[in-house]
Image (cartoon, rainbow, N blue to C red):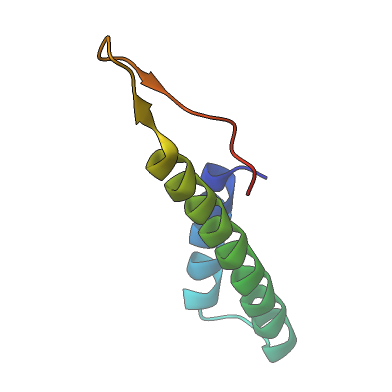
Length: 70
């Protein structure tokens, strides 16, 4: 699942949790899924941040991204 898909699903989860008609079991399941999606999105952001930090400017002004092993 992509970062954007994780964020979209998190928005759906929040909307459902904000609803009036939600039993406890469903709320707990949604909360657990939300935590998993949040962790996945956070991991993806951390990987992207690490790649950005590896960007190297070449002498011609362009940038190179050495192979990232994270």
